[in-house]
Length: 72
Image (cartoon, rainbow, N blue to C red; front, side):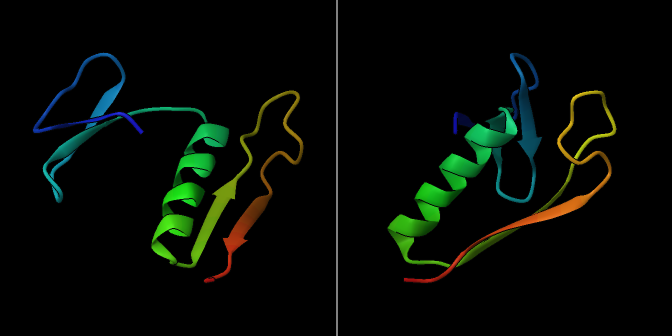
């Protein structure tokens, strides 16, 4: 994930004041891939809960889903 120290509010960045960095937005597939890679490298379990958007073409509009990566 692209990030910068401090506050940046352009080019798709969103500031996270709790950690003092700004993270650039990305699609859901890229976000899961990055989070999964980081968790695997650190040996942490990871669970992500999400809701499919209510839009034409969504696999399961309005349904809640969950991805889980077990600790190694």
